[in-house]
Image 1 (cartoon, rainbow, N blue to C red):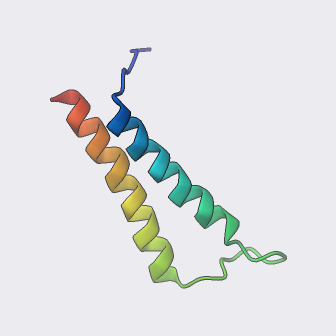
Image 2 (cartoon, rainbow, N blue to C red; image 1 turned 60 degrees about the horizontal axis):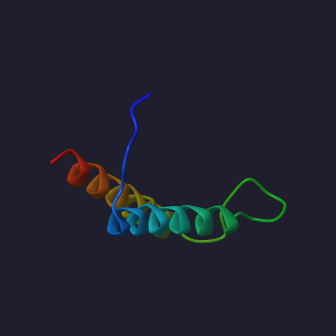
Length: 62
């Protein structure tokens, strides 16, 4: 498996993505299999997290 070395800014982006995704998981309904926030908010949050991860990986490859 290749080793990935990340700069401080890259690590911050990964941590931001992790926080967004963790927060989404915490918004699950307590007794049902659904979220208690709107679908659009979930999609925007997931897209933001993916964008952060993608931008970090793109920078690392260049």
